[in-house]
Length: 85
Image: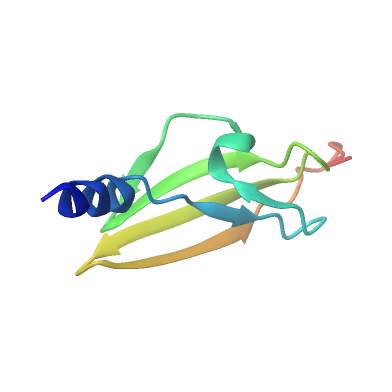
């Protein structure tokens, strides 16, 4: 019984590891800066985040279904006149 409770607690605390496509920095999503509140796009939860190392901005799409996690990221280009340093 104790083992099942431990397994359930571990399963609930799944870490979302994100990798910056700008500099290659890889860490838990909690280490990244959230630029706006998450929103839903179809069946994805979307988060706009900024890399703490290079300050590159990208969107992170995440879905969990049938105990399988699917995720991908999309780079966001800086607008004209802005730098992404």
